[in-house]
Image 1 (cartoon, rainbow, N blue to C red):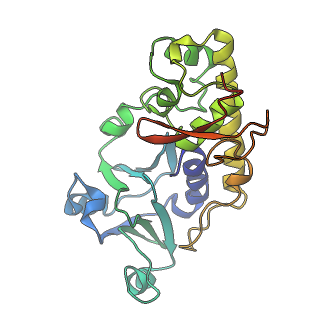
Image 2: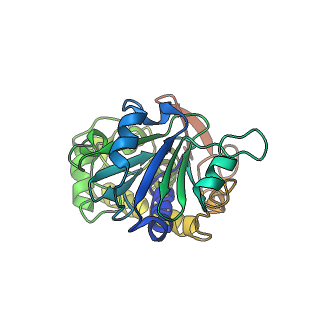
Length: 279
């Protein structure tokens, strides 16, 4: 699942392709991708708009327009695909032979941006403004924003009785952290994911804040080298596994104490940790 580092890398790589381009029309191949909005609504409102920039909030990719905003959420398997032209899109999209799955495509005055999620969890929406987007209104501060200081994190932790892992996954508390990087941050901070958030001292909170920032920036560097290649539909982020210390390392020795990494379940999701040195 794309988390803050992956979406940030996508945003930076996409920006030079789309900034300043005008949307000629929107092709909606799978209407489920725009729910609960109707495909006709998105296509009508996006047509003729100029893309001012590409930006990110938490795990959301945003395309600010001269009239409104396009918001994209990749959920589990969403990705972007770039086509040279509308003819290439129509020749390759959703065809049985040499086909590329595409849910929504924005035909620009130069090139076509496709949004794809074969499991159909990802979404593309149009909003008249940032303030009108309900998903963004509910987000907490971005995990690597200046607002998310050590003091801010400690204040948020102190007001919650939830287990640390569940706290970090709550996007209304802090935006951008998912299952992978929450496990990694807690490993680096030597904190048990089952520990209650309000049990952390200021020193513990400072350790966790440092771990979050370090893990996310290190992952972002991996995601940018190599940078996303939207022209290759088979491309995906490489090398992240080299920096992981806990996630999906069940049974392997902890790189700090040597005891086996364990997988436990929290909130219906897998959590990876070293229960020997994470306290």
